[in-house]
Amino acid sequence: MRRLRVLLSGVTLALAVLPAGAVVARADEEPPIRPEIGGPRVRPPQTGLRDADKHAPMTSTAPVRSRQLIVVVGGYGSEYKDPRPLRNFVDQVNPSGDYDVLYFGSDPAFPYNSYGSIDQNAHTLVAQVRAVSPSYGGVHIVTHSLGGNVADQAFAQGLSAADGVRTYVALSAPHGGSAAATLSEFTLAHLGPARADANAIARVTTFEADTRAAQDLTRIRPVGAPPGVTRLDLRLATDMVVSSDDAQDPGVQSRTLLPTTERGRWDGHTGILMERSAVDLTRQTLATGIVPPKANDRVGDALSYAVSKTADHLGLAMLLVTCTVCAYLGIRAYLRRRRVFLPPV
Image 1 (cartoon, one colour):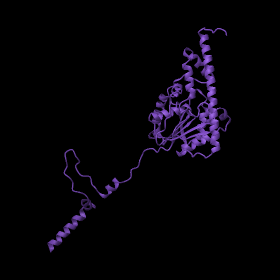
Image 2: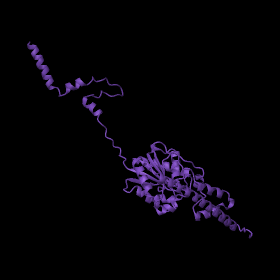
Image 3: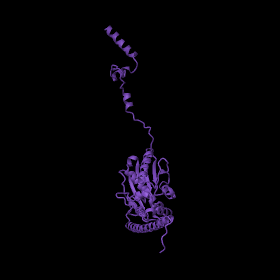
């Protein structure tokens, strides 16, 4: 009995001397494994505290991309024209500066030649959107005239919602090709050696006609945006540059608006940039990612259709007269330059 008391006293004293928690650790952990060559010398402890650390939530240090970007693509010859109408339109769409704005062609690293190849310009647009989109929470594309064809071809080349593109609003875009470009190219092609003189006169009186972009517009066809990108086409009924047939874009929601401004009544092509309804529709589409529902206005729709068809006929008549005059003056200029004179009638 005395020996048993001595033994119990020894065990109690040994437990008191051991560090606190040693018994707990020995109970929780597995026996240490035998060291392997080139491997860890001991097994890491698997205590309850370490399990809690393993399942603790991770804190991300990635930046929050809350800002969004509007990429603006101007039309035919936009780098040589007054940029204020398009800039004023974008300023009204973005009155509070909620979006950053990038004008395509403003960065020398991504040049834009609106008289050049549409495919090449589209390739450059794809490259720039992909270069800048990782810094933004979303990209919105707004175009005018030929800029719509550049954006169309950019989507055809693979630009998509995966690149951060959320919406695409096209103003006065000839998605189905341009009748004006087709007739101009046809006229120039049949002038032979007088082609350069006729084009020089067209450049002074109206616009640069003999360009790669104009040639591309004779063969281009509509391109639908990929899934996930909200599309909207806007056009004024008084547009005599882009006809209603030119603007055809199957499968895309569109609006043909009646003009409310003086500029819109006689120049629907540029006048759409001054229309409040176009500004509001663009702003709502960018903000919500949804095209606003179309109002049920049969009278307004009928009037818009009638005005649009009238403008189509007037535009074609003016184009025929312009091509005829430029061709005649071009031939005369060529003959005079070659010192060839027609006999008097």
